[in-house]
Each structure stands twice: as structure tokens, then as C-alpha cells.
Length: 294
Ligand SMILES: N[C@@H](CCC(=O)N[C@@H](CS)C(=O)NCC(=O)O)C(=O)O
Image (cartoon, rainbow, N blue to C red; front, top):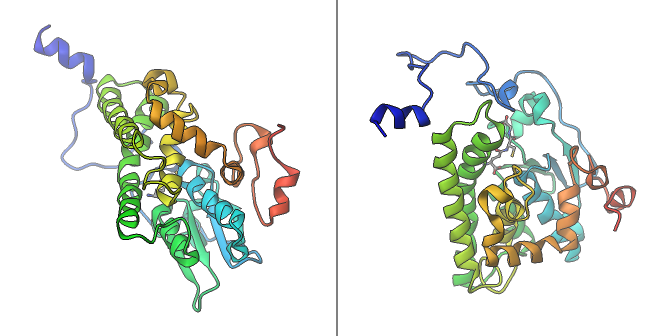
């Protein structure tokens, strides 16, 4: 194969970057209409306020699911003060650019929340920071032993750094880009499979990510890599051969069976199977009106 043949297999050749980039058209792909190169609000919109101390503004993407699983796990463990209102933020409609949302998350991404039990109230954004805040507030799902706690935080922060390669890299170019580009798909498939192998090797010798206990590291990693292993993300199970990661499969299935995880997956979910959709959650009883028929 000549050099120019191998280049043409990978790279479209009809674009030379200008000296200065300007935003002259939507980039194409599934989320093109919400992508823009500036921050800040685009419109005035107050956030709704419910009756509970925790007000969550989110959507049931993997980043959103981490937090709703944590709330449902806390409630299942008996922490009645973990009650929360979960309001739907439709990112495809640009709700994340409303003035009220930007006040609590200047980065305009779900999940974001406000804890009104503090004086003054506390705003929170970044799913990892929210998990850590709730774990410390309730003293739950974060080990107290020095080594296990450190290991839990190692893996929580691993997830926060790793998932953009999976979602923004692999998922974007495999499932959402306007056309398949071999260079990009190869680049990020390589990384996604390497990450799956990291998890599979780690879980060969441990029940959960930080050892014997289920922690916020499991919640964060499961929302992305567990759901990927279970074939729920990007329609990519066969492409990535997710069944070959046996330890990851064992762990993914065990967490998937937790009732709180099932409830957490349903909250703020306006898409997919109607029986799994609970658009807003204000009370434990809300699940009775929705839920999978088992
Ligand atoms: N690192 C952030 C990432 C949050 C994030 O990317 N959220 C996406 C949905 S999963 C979002 O709100 N996207 C809207 C946008 O990009 O405009 C976190 O973990 O909280």
C-alpha cells in the first residue's frame, strides 16, 4: 500500500484548517444543534423548586444515572434525609443554557443540584463531586479505612477522566457522527477496549472496585462501563465484544440486580422503554405509577 492510499483510507481530504477557526455552520451529528463555542445562558429561565432539601436537575444519561442511583441507594439504606426532587433537564432542547441552570452549573451540563439543607444553600455540579459530597454528608458508600477509601477515590477519579474517551470519543464517532471516519473510530475503539480490559483485570481479584464493599466508585463506573458491558450504550456490544470481559460481566450484572439501581435508572428518563420512564421524581411513591412489568 502506498502512503497516499493508506492516508486516504483514514482521512477525508477536503478540509484544510484556516488560520483562525470561525463558527460558520453546525458541525453535523446527533447533538450538533446544542453545540456552540461560547458559555453562559442563552435565555432567562428559573429552575423549579420542590419540597425536599436536595433539588436535582438532570437527565438519565450515564452521568445523570450515577447521582440518581446514589440517592436511591441512600434511601434504601434508610437515610430518610436523602429525599430529593429530580427535575428533568432536556439537553436536546437547550434547557442546560437557561439562566437558572447556568447559575448552579456554569459549565451547562447535567447533572447539577442544590442542597438547601445548608445555610446558605450549596450548589453542586460534576457527577463525581456530587457523589463524593453525598457520600461524605451521609457517611455512606465511601470506605473509612485509609487504603480502601483511597482506592475508592482513585477509581472515582479514573472514571471521571476516562469516560470522555468512551462517550465523547468512541460513542461520538461510532454512533453519533454524521459519517463513519475510520481513523477516529479506530483511535477511540482502541482506547475503549483498553479501558474495558483495565476494569476486567482489576475485577478478576475483587468483588467491587475498591475491594469487598460497594462504593461510589462502583456507581460511577457502572453507569458507563457496566451499562456498556450490558449492551445498553451505543449499540456497540458486538463491535466491542463486551461478552469477552468475564469479570466485568459478573460485576455489571451483580450491580444491575440492585433494586436501587433499577430505580435510579428510571429517574429523569424521557426515552426508551415507556415502562422504564419516570420523567420527574418527587416521592418514593412515584415509582408505583411507573416501572418495568416483571
Ligand atoms: N464531567 C461532567 C460531564 C457531564 C456531561 O457531559 N453531561 C452531558 C450529558 S451526559 C450534558 O449535559 N451535555 C449537554 C451539553 O453538552 O450541552 C459530569 O460528570 O458531570
